[in-house]
Length: 236
Image 1: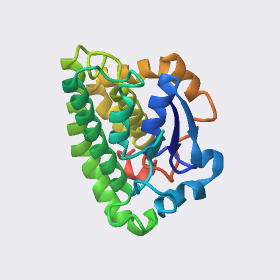
Image 2: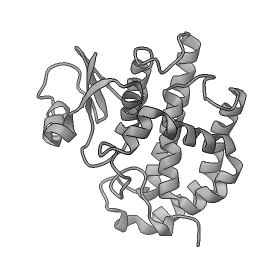
Image 3: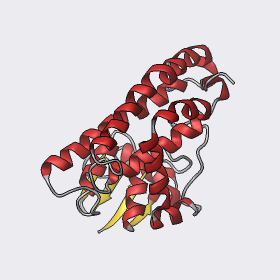
């Protein structure tokens, strides 16, 4: 299968979770917006093309299928890319964990845009400061401790006893959080040895290491989900 991935061209965003799975598996895919421009992708959002209407990127074309929502895409890609165990119970657990990651990603986004997506960060600084403080002190420890327990119960090395797309997504989650909240993550990370070790192992996987060293891996920036605003991090 030759896949087509649709996501905004200038940021990692939610599309990066899908991209990491494709790269790790060595799958053949076209990154449509990066190769042809965002306007080509927007045509699908505007309903120019026949077939299912995606609400927002990322979405993936696989033959005649058009699949949207990050967790849904990874649920589909897991079996053919050998990134999820064969049993239905394991596949459902993988999707459950991915949806929980998505919940945290949404909270991270809302830490810098707590009032409205259509407003600039500078228009909601005071609200963002309050939201980010709660994220750092309450929500991040709660979520990350949960994932640490998931790893511990699975033997310490993988979320599902074997390598899966969930491991790749936890790598991306930890990488993004360390970029956005370096001081807070240094503090919180002391209690997360398994997650930190998983991040390092994933980064050393041959195809992932090659991808991270390539221009295909865009750097984190202040236009994506994981944004580094020093005033939203732990006090220095």
